[in-house]
Amino acid sequence: MIVRDLGLVEFEPICEAMRKFTAERTPDTQDELWLLEHPAVFTMGLNGKDEHVLNTHDIPLVNTDRGGQVTYHGPGQLIAYTLVDLKRNKVGVREMVTRLENSLIAIMAAQGIAAESRADAPGVYVDGRKIGALGLRVKRGACYHGLSFNIDMDLTPFSYINPCGYQGLEVIDLKSLGCELTMEQAKQYFVSEFKQQMLENNA
Image (tube, rainbow, N blue to C red; front, side):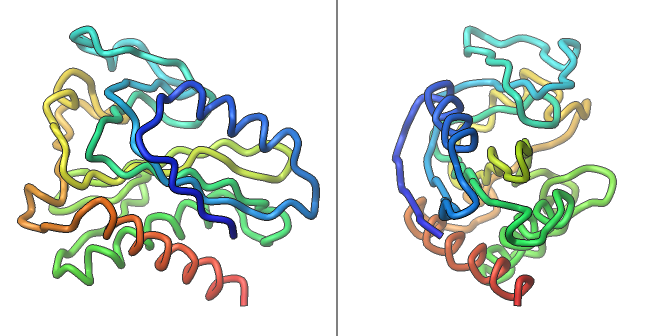
């Protein structure tokens, strides 16, 4: 798997790059993992409902082709886009989501934080508060988009929406939980855990 650290980049050009990569990939194209941060932006999934956007406060709102409802991205949040050939890896979409969730849960367990996934709402939670969001898109047997993991960010804009379509859902980040993990450390841990998830389950 090729890992690319892209830094702070705008949302729309990255979306276009993911679509292009997926459309042009062949059965031999290596899987890629893109790690990055986005400037402040709300993104709306394919089945997203406008009623979940309360007030954008001049933050851009972009419609996108992933699953799920509205969410927020901003600096201090780790974005991991997984450009993976599901068919070649013999993994279904739900299983891919589980592997991503388990990667975040393992990172936090190593920091002494008990996190969990929920069967009724994809993502990762600490005491009912959401710290990781997921949304994938599958085309031609390959997925793109991925997850967001709140490290040390301004959480205020989450109050401008119903996060992931859930009214009153609290959102948290690692910093608020007393965890001083840096963005660089979070990236390294995520690469390690995600690769482990893919290797173990594909063995």
